Image 1 (tube, helix red, strand yellow):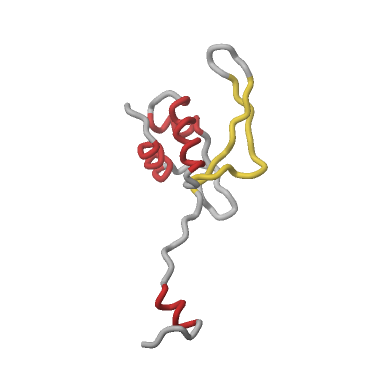
Image 2 (cartoon, one colour):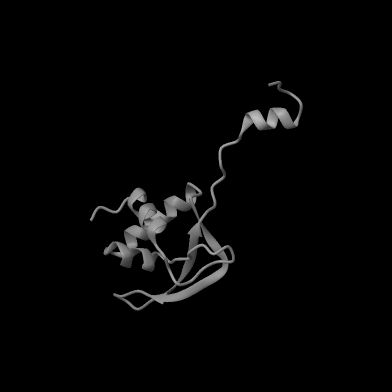
Length: 104
């Protein structure tokens, strides 16, 4: 399977995990998404890094879990992530009317 930011984002949107944040959105780790996609975790972590850079997902503050690598057993901290709420496009007609700048 070819892992891209688009395929990972699609998997994140389709993911329904047991853990929810305060707003009821699913919270996930890269291991969860890799399991759903049936691929290795490393390319999913790389894609999530880009998705964070593009501000499509965000780390959930104050949450983390300790994991161990398969090969060497080294410990590392894994973040919990969630989809970042996206703003809707601005309704400029409504803004013009509210501020008295436009006429209809």
